[in-house]
Length: 614
Image 1 (cartoon, rainbow, N blue to C red):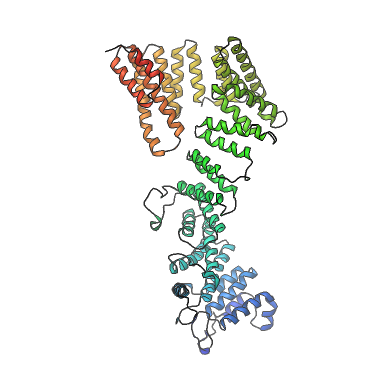
Image 2: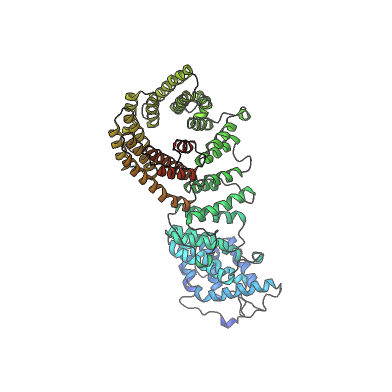
């Protein structure tokens, strides 16, 4: 009738003999305990004794390994991690692992067949014994962790994962946790293993451990599963390592992530979908990570789609509209962004505290489009009124946008008297912005120089741009470009071309395209058509080489559109040069190229109309 926890039959005379390494001599002395009954009772509290007694009542007798597992648990609970390790070292885990794998597999099959007889399988450990040994391995791992031996701890923890995964290759069956602690031990090991590898500094192993926890159905609770997915996503995003998928995880198809960033984005999209469906609790960190990952990859429209799925009440309406406006503006859709900002600043939010960032962003977007100049004046004035009570350091920004919008309004104004007033107001507000910013804001100085150049105050414009260049240490394409234009307006074309050549040596890829076109225009102005044609040839060759990049990236669509527009304008400029040289066939070929990009461009049709009939 005496049945051991492992399911094996034992005789009294088969108990392990006492030896110098036995529990009675080594383990008790290592922990500082006496084998006498009185000393035992004085060292352990009632809870620990009751725990041992309940286990004894369940198993009726203990084998050698199970006794060590229980004693090691007691040492771990007391905080004697060294003693616990010494006890756990006596368990021959390597020899027990095949038996545990077989026991888990057989007992699981037995459960599926709904057999109520638990001891019909000869020489097969019981699930209670398996859970006890797995707990011992897990506590051994935790003891090593407490002692700072993170690599050893991770290897011990991996034994638990390997054992259960070998026994259950298709995942954890439902209901297995009702009769024993196997599932509980395994879940704890799944979550602990990547943390141990992280402490050991082995990020490759961290990613692999997280993926093992996600690749099969292990019956993790939704919230715990979401935590694992989130941790893997953040490790892939910020860990700085690329870990290839294991062969068994690779699936051919368009859904297979090609990089760690793509895998992180997929995980975060899954988590955001779960939050939208309220399957897991709202976690603002998930949206922060998703915002970062989609921003660095240029997927701003996709980010906007997921922001729109956020349930009402999570953010204030004005805050959510502002966030969406940022997304659409980054995607190059400023009109959509401006419509959202009108909502955030409109009458529907009049009863709430004004959302200052929305007014400031609205003023900025309006300053970029002359058609919205008058609306931008209202936004900017509202910003200036609001900074009197809060955010006073934004006063110069409000004045800057107000000056820009007045200047844009002057250029689209029909009445001369109105245009003169707008021009004066523009310079006034821009100068006020420079003073309030203590002349330390380079953007204000650049804008002031631009407005002076437009109003033909060339000397003042030159001084402003030179001050801007000093602030930026000469590292701004816009500064070089505006300086070249100002110098060319002073009829110093050779100096302007020299400035452009100097800027080309320091400019980035996109900036080089703008500067190359400016150089070609300056060469045309100097009556150097051959040099201009050569410059346009270089410009178009660079654009053609970058097309392949945009096709592969499939992101940053607004930048691709900017280059496409620049390509069309380059063909139109070439057509004009050839027309002036009476090379009408070449001009027609260039016009055809520009119309292949945008068929209804007015300038292309104007050049076509100027060509003589052939």
